Length: 156
Image (cartoon, rainbow, N blue to C red; front, side, top):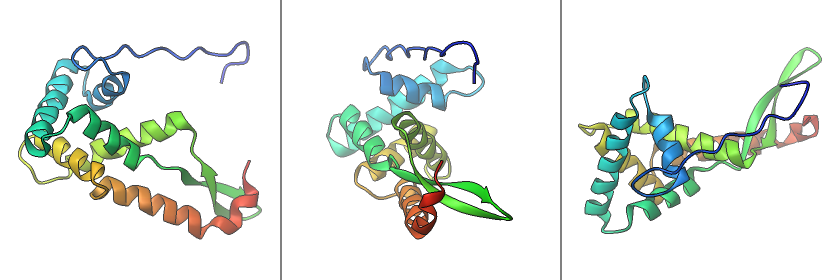
């Protein structure tokens, strides 16, 4: 954290095909070793598969998937005295988005389909219809926060 002035957040330029900042952020998160064109081809390939399977607008499916995976609360460890408590805290909007993107990418890696585009498409379709591993992760996070509600007064 800077001592002198507030750091201005950099603007993400929208992606070339869908003109969406959200898709651009997803591409940047998916990118490995600076290979942006590979990440773009994976995402656009996944969007083609989504369009083929669901007969819906892939951008709408993508946005609803991210919306469904977004967590509202999470637990953070807080040490009080000699013991550590899992304190439920609200997730700020930018972190909600980052977590949902990260979870979808991570859980699509573990799927059984052949290509990464197919894995990603499958996970996005599942998340849009409120099933799949990323949705389970969100529900587990919410369940943990609900179970530790008694420690909410330790919030900082």
